[in-house]
Length: 235
Image 1 (cartoon, one colour):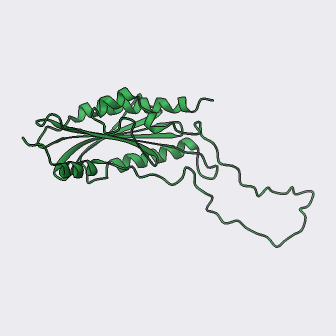
Image 2 (cartoon, rainbow, N blue to C red):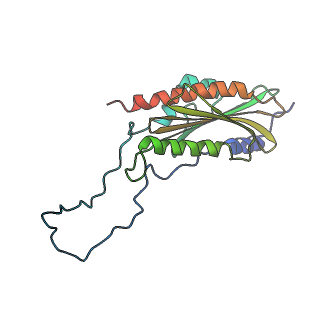
């Protein structure tokens, strides 16, 4: 079995990177129009004036998310991506990304990647609470995991023991004739949403990793990431 050429490896690694789509903000603005009045008369004593001030957005339990590239330990990164190109992770907008290819064994070349994304949402008194808005965002992350990259063998499972709510999505996708197994764990802890995607593939004919193994490791890493949220918010 031959080693893949450098250009082919570069193309495969580039295609394996899975950026996460982010939401522009954590709270919605008031879309209603402000009314104006030409009546400058002073309100009568019997009818107290109504305040036109908009109440401030309701803060969630957690004000911020941790440094995403430190939200899972170096030991966990080593387990998930043994040959990570950068063990400290690649800092992206709203996420941290690790990937690597073990090309030393030409008969069993294994690729792994992890993308960790978090979002803290605030509440809006004109819409819903911070936790509710976080749940809506989490549901959107689950839908995204079940639809992106033309997935096959899609399975969605409610998952206990990770935050206040969690769902695990498993899929298979194909990029440049390489089949990837993917596990995305979406969890909510109060008003913070964690989405961890773990992908693996065998290159040059090597066997792909089992979905069961990827799922076990992805859920453990997601649980660790969720635990990092309260620690980052301690005063």
